[in-house]
Length: 119
Image (tube, rainbow, N blue to C red; front, side, top):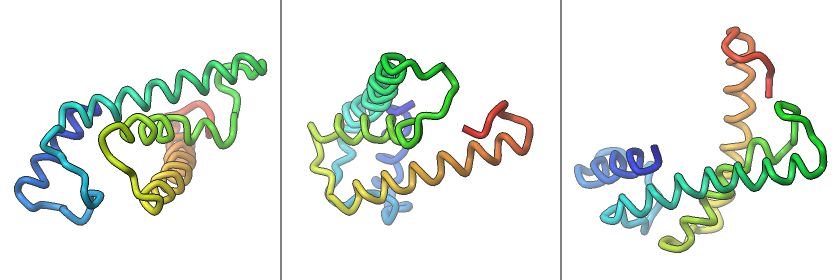
């Protein structure tokens, strides 16, 4: 999915559509590697968090604030640093937005009956 998302962003940037949504200086011409790093970083971030969660004996499905909300975005941001120097302002926005949106969408899913728990 990271590769597909990066490809779609490459197409949008190529056609000057929604350029304001893309970080300045990010080169989408290497969309395959960018998507690979973002997707892999998200998976590795989640795996590292899960490993720590099990080591401190938190049961699967139990809350682990704030790491449940930030694991994937931190992993992605760390991995993408190999090809893009993420500005600190973008880093902070990504962290804050991910934290808030994760909580909000999970609560919406819970109240709509799509999810079994709020977290």
